[in-house]
Image (cartoon, rainbow, N blue to C red; front, side):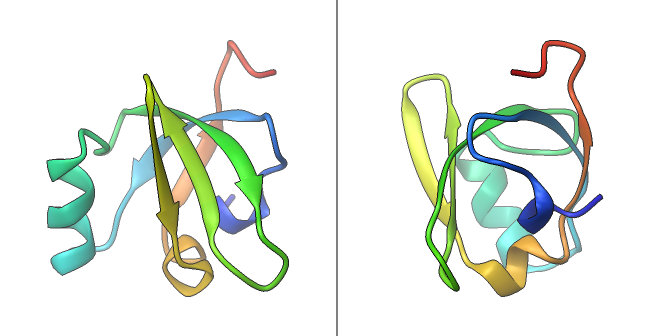
Length: 76
């Protein structure tokens, strides 16, 4: 499943981020492969807003389509 397919409030585990600048930037925010994130909101035709700990990060929809995730056992 890709990041753009998750629902608001759902918790997922990042399983794969494509190599490149986006991966580097996400790692700087503490989001890497194996990280648990919650979908805070999805803007129609816009970014997916993720929440990890107390920070929120907007990921563009095109990038979200390239990030692979799986549902967390703690799914909400």
